[in-house]
Image (tube, rainbow, N blue to C red; front, top):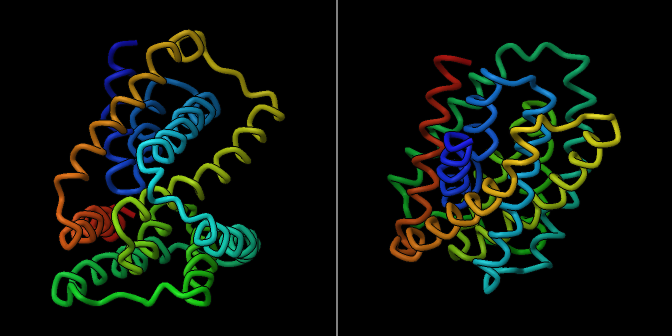
Length: 237
């Protein structure tokens, strides 16, 4: 239980700081020891609380208009992307996404002043594009971070918006897992007493780190995380 709590702490810190990654880190580790359905339900619960912590800790950045403009088209287009992927070969798509992520980081490193103007049309288009690609590739948080960072929002707006959108998504998938009869193992169920506070303290640590990162450097931090994931997709799929 201690090791799961420690994993939850660090994964929550990383996920809050970058806007993605909590599920990637936790699922990758826990699936080595527990059945996948139980892991997905447990990590979904942790992620759900992480979303709440983001909204609490960065509440000054909540812009519900941006959340709806970005999130609603994203939900619709993720469904469209999922329909397409079942009819097409996607063997090359992870590598293609990896190249795009690496290229994005190099571009913003060379052109740090670049950003998309966050008007209503561009925010909705970014949400639709990220949702569509997420439906095809199954990496919603990663692509949401990419498009939100391209708008170069203030740090609090970026994190709160990411958390609010993820809250809608996580609520939907948790309901599905429970409806389909997935149950938590005892170590997860009783361990929530420790795991939920661990996720909060991880998010709180991330807030302290975020506060120390200059706004001009914050997008490079997110871009650097995307760069690492991009290399992983290129070489490991």
